[in-house]
Length: 406
Image (cartoon, rainbow, N blue to C red):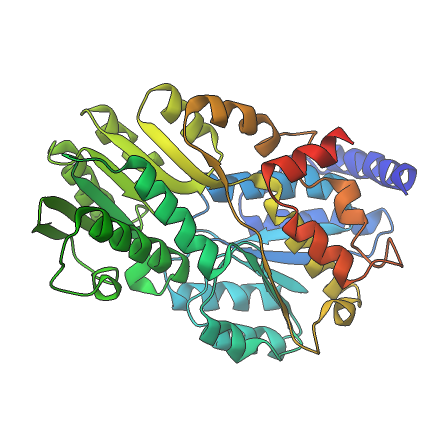
């Protein structure tokens, strides 16, 4: 199989040289890749990738893994990426673009109305998977029986909450004040909502504070909100930093010098100038990116609960199973699967250093080709759901290090 892939890649590379420079749009790039691969005799599978922000560090990591590793191992796959998606209408427009371009399956990182999105995909014969996400029980159950909904892999409700709680406890201390970046919590992002609730619950417990509103309600505020009570001062700053007004509000709060500690549900890359301008520390639930690596080195990042680039490998494998006719073998009682895959955690730069190479490896990945091969039924006929489940849930740094050391 590897010899076959190598021969295909050689032909693929020659065709790439002949074709000249790649077009600018992801639609054109996907179509060019498909034409080149089809010329080499492959049956091509086009996969859509719906991103919330194509420039986001975590999305860049995932894209690098798909483009520079997965496409080298699976020469029969090409990807069509969205630009940044900030709402339901934009996501539906991208799904329509996928349908027009013969996409067979879509990886969706940020969902706004999952029932509507899955229904649209089903109507157009496209499989739908959330390869690194957490949905509410109601959202998941509404689509679990749809045969075109493959499933969801992510931290899950409990681990999302626990990650934010642990980070808050690690960085809290008497005399500190806190800026909470709640991201898309007010926009229906369940991951960000859970993280924000956990941060507020934990600070309320530590300080013995009594908020006038419930932490559930505060997590959903859509405007910057300051709370001062019982010796605790905090500000909740909502919104995605890709939106200029949200980035400006967060930068202003940081630069004010009124807050000692940032607790963020989202990446803080766009705020590094502001963070570097004052004495402040930042804990972030994000990913093991180069940006966070340098943030640790500069003393601004103090804690990361993060994902890593190949963490979406099992999600790709599940979608590949579905579009190659083997999806039913991975359904649970006829329903989509829902599997947990949590975070790696670094509370200092030494821990981050030890994890960073495996998190961002170009050749040695936490989830590599052999791992994915073992759970793709068209390549390994004996593969089954239990094998897949075991691989997905072996996500910890020690689990991945053991696989690569074997």
